[in-house]
Amino acid sequence: MTAEPRSAAAESSPAGTDAEPRLVVDGAEVARYLVRPDLDPRHGPRPYLHPVRTRAGTPVTDALPADHVWHLGASLAVQDVDGANLWGGRTYVRGTGYTWRDDHGVIAHTGWRDRAADRLDHDLEWRDRHGRVLLREHRRITATPAGEDAWWLDLSATLTAATGGDVHLGSPATNGRPGGAGYGGFFWRAVADGEPLVRTAEAEGEEAVNGSAAPWLALSATAPGGSAYTLVFTGLGPGDRWFVRTAMYPGVCVAYAFDSPAVVAAGRPRHNRHRVLVADGHLDPAGIAARLDEAVVP
Image 1 (cartoon, rainbow, N blue to C red):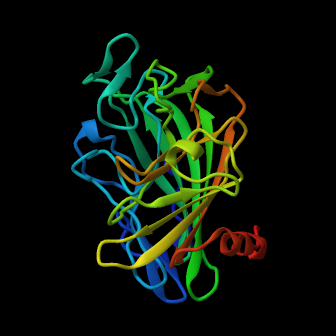
Image 2 (image 1 turned 90 degrees about the vertical axis):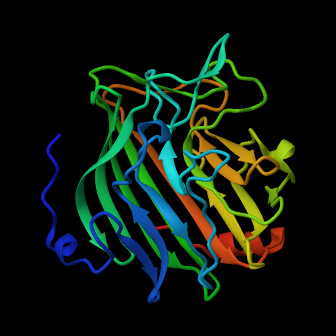
Image 3 (image 1 turned 30 degrees about the vertical axis):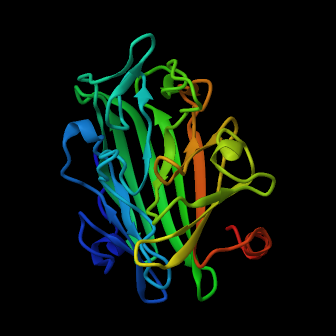
């Protein structure tokens, strides 16, 4: 795929360098976007947002943590894309378990469509270890204010099969791992001092919300240093489920293949839209509902 030429807006954008553009809300930097990270292939190289911060400057993402080095801030990643590991780490093999394999691919930036302080719009390729393109993606990320203490991160992604046939998306769960390990999709590795609280409108706690299909899911935590924050996730697509971890590590994923494989059918692009409210303080259910009611979705 030939990268599209940059627009005039992209050429003149003040939002950081080409390799590390930034998102700004009301003059304050709220996120950096590492477009071409220099990573070990086993860590699933891909563009990712880190650090993401609240309006008050509290960091709410983690990257390259010692427990799972391939967890990279907020990113799109899937462990099994037609047999290619685009998540990083060991691959779950049915009947064997987690195994180190030479199957790691890369999700690569190929060209900007638009860049500004509040939006980043570009094209990507999902490639296997041989460089064969499995999926092409158009991604748009925007940042908009949500009052003085919060902002909305909006990530839209359209995936198109590039192999001439259907492309299958899988997870450790679809490959035989028990315990609700259906991760893979839009994943947010959070940062927390102690175990965070996770809830939906109907349930609370990791076991209760993992695998659910609630319209929204909130994670409230205290960052190292003592600052409180809340993340409110929306944007499950048809068949998507929430994958959640709080005890082992703080993480939330819009899982594309939680308990059954997903398909990006030939000639039928898959459209995803994920919105996250990044707020200072611990929001209760009533406060979350009020923020969602106030949200204007373009």
